[in-house]
Amino acid sequence: MGKDLGYGHQMQLPKQLKQAIEAEAARFGRATLAQAASELSDNYRFRQSGNHKFMATAAHRIAYAATRMPATYAAIHKVFREIQWPVTSLLDLGAGPGTAAWAAAEMFAELQTITLLERDQELIALGKSFAAQSNHAALRTAKWSAEDLTLTAVLPRHDVVICSYALGELSNQMARTVVQAAWQATEQFLVFIEPGTMKGFALIRELRDQLIRGGGHILAPCPHAQSCPMPENDWCHFAARVERSALHRQLKAGARGYEDEKFSYLIIAKHFAQSALRARILRRPNLQAGFVQLSLCTSEGLQKATVTRRNKDDFKRARKADWGEAWRGSLTTEKIKQD
Ligand SMILES: C[S@@+](CC[C@H](N)C(=O)[O-])C[C@H]1O[C@@H](n2cnc3c(N)ncnc32)[C@H](O)[C@@H]1O
Image (cartoon, rainbow, N blue to C red; front, side, top):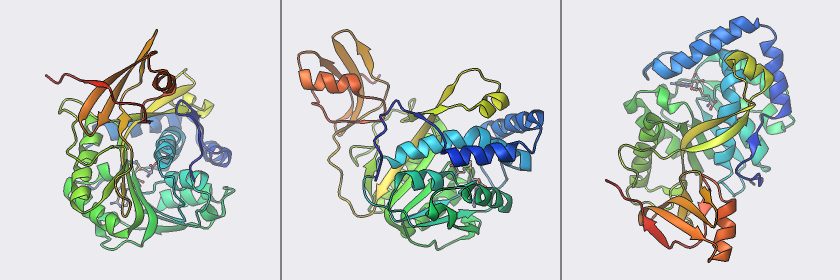
């Protein structure tokens, strides 16, 4: 079950994973890895989705583990917190070095079976070497399989199926096909995470429509299954605060001790009916003396709630509330103007 970490929490990788990454990174010169980290971010920023590899060299793979894995781990961890049910098995599609499996092993105490599908054999070898260092038996005994998702029609059934930061690497047509196979393989929850950009959110919104049409129930982040009220020039995204290790700071030449990883996500439940969630906080709350303003998504559309001291319980709640959380206070709200 999910641990309660408070939303402003600064995420760190599990110690064994951090050490395993540092040990692999020590085999390369810092300048080589910094160059690889820079190429990697260019690849992700400028290359179109399709059938090519974003991580092409051994240095790219280690640079991914050192500079991106902490951020994708933090996003996955935060998303998994929404699943407050026992999870015994996980299927990870486009697993990379196994990021989601590490987050699941931390979050789901009942986890026994992990299956990871990834097309890059060398990333699998790297991920296996990391997993061997874990305290969690499920991670150490995980099954890794070298497979191209676009060529795999039937996937093995698991409680939770996740595809994090991977679907955006496929063409839209391919992504739709993979999503169908993923949905067939889902016993309980299907999870997608993409970068918190207009493009990442556009894909998440499309999946939302596709899966609702296919009979799925949204667990998070949406508090309703009606059409998404986000206007065209905006995007629904959230943030996870990530500690930047010394290695990360060296490779990305940054001084700050943390970064905010922005992501868009969707959790679709196979069997649960619509959750009792009434509203989701879509921005960092605006705290002022005597009142707090919250931007909310509700079944009545996007709303702005102004919570004042007059409503003591809600005011206390609103002062502690954070971006991405469910809002369980009252909805005496004023509609956001959409010009
Ligand atoms: C950005 S990485 C994300 C890794 C991991 N899921 C995470 O969240 O950190 C995308 C991964 O998807 C894999 N991938 C992309 N297309 C794939 C395909 N057609 N079949 C299997 N894996 C694929 C890539 O090799 C890469 O490891």
